[in-house]
Image 1 (tube, rainbow, N blue to C red):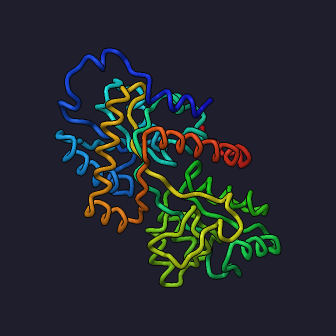
Image 2: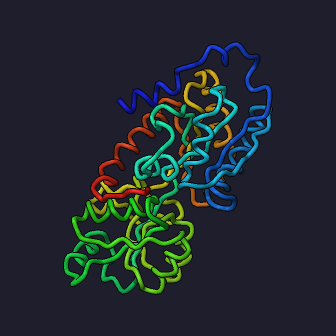
Length: 321
């Protein structure tokens, strides 16, 4: 049902939008539902520049953070379905937020028209060196042998990191205590100091500390190895394919946007992602560029991602009032 609803968001087209002239004939607004300076902002600005050059119209960035990305997403969900208001969505701002927030002011399955996937930022499972584990099976054994439950850090309650830690505990079938922080920086600082045992987060901020030996990387929580750390095996390679917590980035329009406009945006997005300079800068920022073949393929990916996280969130009792 949810997958059909997401696909319906692509194809339900209001007649008034069809009656307008050539698209686009004015600037397009891209909402990034996070403050400036973070990974979402960097990815959005790079891609918007490439899309603007191919659409022949400016793509104007508007940062609108708050409520785990929900404020920016709401603005797009309630905008005119004409293809002129887009959102940079992701696993945190759309998937996890829609599952953990007590009140979501839109139906995530129908409020958006998925345009295309940009790529995936691999998350890495790390531990403090005091933890006697160099692999996920060893972490499982160490957690089962510990007198007290191991602790895992997250950037905050209801974050992707919170859900990832809960998923690891559930799949490994071990007790683990969640320690929430106000952002990645404080969580990483306490991991390095040994105040928490486990932290699963995007590779980019962790990589220097992995290389210095301040923290130990156990696995990439995704389907494929990271080009930035090709020697590090995935969770699936270690026998736990259910642990998949990569952060994805994608482009979505308002639900009901005419399909021909969605296709126009998809073509511009994929062309931008094929640009060698844009791709190079995205990869340097820790993103594995993975454009979707069609809006429908991205819609399926979006629905499957939410279906995969829903039982994890439910079992962990994750809720933000």
